[in-house]
Image 1: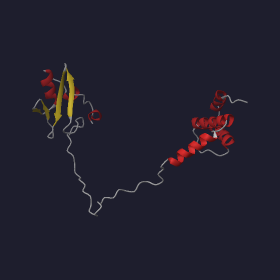
Image 2: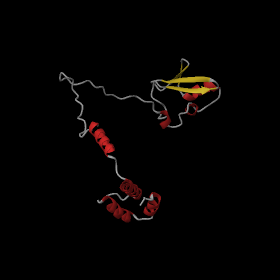
Image 3: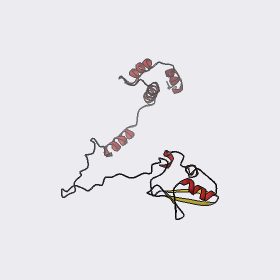
Image 4: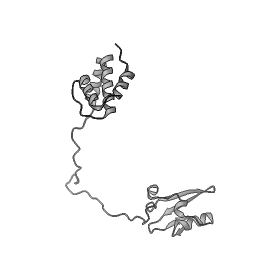
Length: 169
């Protein structure tokens, strides 16, 4: 008798989780720890199909075994890297702080902000001291650069698309 998958799935959707767990035991012959209804339905219907239509062919089973044997499986976590060189001296490491602008909307110094405005590309470099360079001249704020570019007052962060800290970083 052929298995009607749609009918079986519809019937299992009407079952409670304890009923599905009992059906799982009937189909698999062992307990299941899961109490997730969709998972149980998928597993049960898969096993019912395998039982009705037959399992993997012997050739497929051998190929799966070959693939498993060829896989380099790691059974332990890698050891911590050695912090000494081959001659026993400690490896050099540099620690320090990176000065960031105080406003979280700004990218780190050295980054270039770009914006297309009326057919030309506006490029502004963020400087170390919190200022900005535009066309060889240093400005104290992005708003000043936006005013120099457009001729009218703009919020500099808005003009360059730095509305919140997530977009800037």
